Length: 478
Image: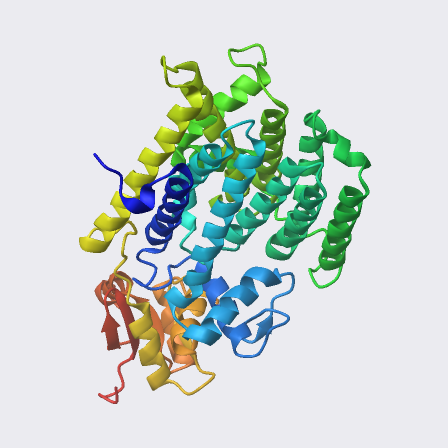
């Protein structure tokens, strides 16, 4: 069968394959970001801070008009710029993080190529493929999460480490560390000890410790990190510590969510710890293992309570998995086809699979991202019509900060942070402040109406999906 003209020649095939890969990765990662509302998670709080920053309050970050010290600026300002350009919507907040995730994939591709001894193009593309195809990475890549910016920073710093002792590697390493601090706060400084320990484990690259470019880049990144953390960042003591048991449980969930590629990464870790195993080990393997392990430990224990903090270890883990896959192919090479050729064949097959998946998404109703029927935007719009500017909605059994973030983002009206939890407390609150508008769910509304002897007659003002706005009955005024 004759080849198509644009696939004639090795260079043309490689370029076209790379174009197909990133096009497919963009569609697979970004598909569905316009659907649904902001979820009832920290993403809503971050989106509201970005919306207020887009309104002119660039610094410090604000939530419902109150300053929020210590919020890292890079993710916030990126989302705020998107809102200024595209308007305040969930997809406008998420869109830049899709491109940040793709940038992280591009850096992982370059880092894997720098770590490979031969056939660098295939090795880099395979690592990028495994990262894009990782369910754990794919879960957070299309969301407005500062940890996506952190993964990008880690990928850039890792690219610099693997290019050392070349001067370009030193500057990429320093830029990655500085970017991590400004995207994750003081915790971003964890990249320094993790990277230095990883570099020391690689005998071929540790000569960079004596190079002026590396010393200057490291000192500059440390100075930038300390200046931010001790100044605008709110101090160095602000690490949100996590119990060891919770960290182990979340690490296991992240590993399980990355199957099957996490099996390859685990095999690579075992091989690196046992250098006498078949195939041996290389300095880049030790660097990757130390870097990934220390990042998982540091961010697992002091990176907050959200599972996505383990995204910091995703870039080195993807390269470890790709290198292990390359070793397996090389070990099983057939006569007339070496491991390098088999690796090139594998990454081409995987790119075509990714392309087929992209086409399937575009031409069919298939959706990789589950749509949640959550009509909080309708409720928020109604509160904007019923309440004056600056007004707030009373809260019955709803999460205060997250609920306030979603009402503010979609309607500009806040929700009381302190929720009323019991029917008796609700009755007393209505007596103290008659005429207030309340937010709850249909289930809680039904519980109130079924409660015997409840002293207040309630009137439903508006309903959208499972959400209800209500007030007390006042002779049909509402």
